Image 1 (cartoon, rainbow, N blue to C red):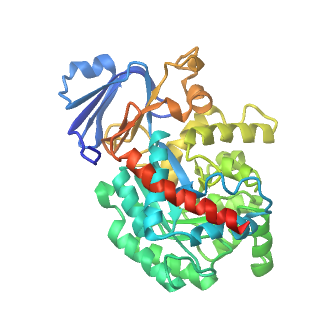
Image 2: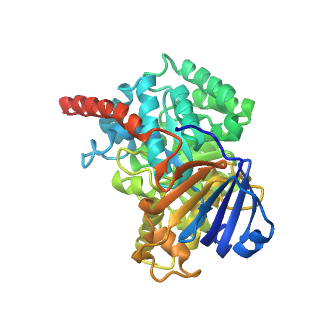
Image 3: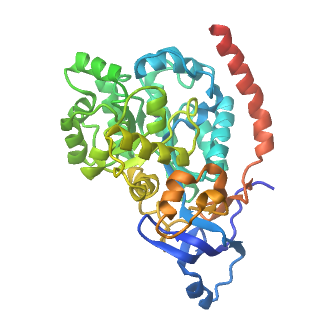
Length: 453
Ligand SMILES: [Zn+2]
């Protein structure tokens, strides 16, 4: 029966590779998990001697055991638009939203969000993503879907004052809803669910509204997430309105800081990169979505070189899968070719961005992002018995994970010590029932969308 029951203790035995982080890789290792935490890990021989008595034993003989992947920016509930707004003309983010995206929001109710979110969360589990940040509307539905999925979530209820969306009657009501969501959901479920304040973007809120968002974040000590410098039309609009570039404008009003994560951050001047560094603002890099929407190429190698924390993310499932293996590959490929330099962003850096740096970008680095004693047990098992992983050595395992593995290699997923998927069978949700419920929602939306064209 699906549910969130957790075994008291789990032993993952005989992993071919235990990838604790991008630097520490153990050949033939074990991980011992108790009460949701990693209690011990090391070479198989070492742990055998300690004679733990686990309730569940998972054989990982042909597997790589890695930290769960961290998706620092997604709109999980927008699964129902997938493939329906492809290949259409739009120029920039404001234009894309107006022509292709906002209509989809109007279609939503609390019920449809809960179901379409759950579809996206199922996809994430199957793709080995254990932590994600989710921007969307109807936060109560987002939260319940996240709770039931067992995944680690940073909820970002979207607020803005330039547009009416179906989950609230006024911009003030949006802010009240964010406060309610923080009070009800922040750090619940053993800390698995987190909440941030999410003013939608630099161009969709007035200054007073941004200030109110800041006040809420300060009042509850939570972080902020916001779309920044995503496309050239945004840069033009902000320059015209405020005489500043988007990140400069954010700095002026006090929105940058160590607990702020900027989504996309593509069009940055040298000065704006310095502002990120100065304020320790975090960045979510979404290469697949940036390319598919034709928004631009973010200056990621420069930001990483400056020591700015850059996590990786998928963005909207309308145009990209919620799949961090794809994101890792695109990250390497786009920046190497953009600079005509194959040595840029080695696999080790990309793996770190998809795990430890992602966790840090979300303020969760003490809890997750690597396999370490005392950390929460967010663990993914990858099946290495595929000819594409030949030859397999300690020296190329990270390259295999970044460039050769795909989501289908994910066998087992554990979050907070609970097994969400085992041998590719979802344990926590009833996948078949959820897809049956979701199907008519997707079909109805597609019909309405086609009717408008
Ligand atoms: Zn986004």
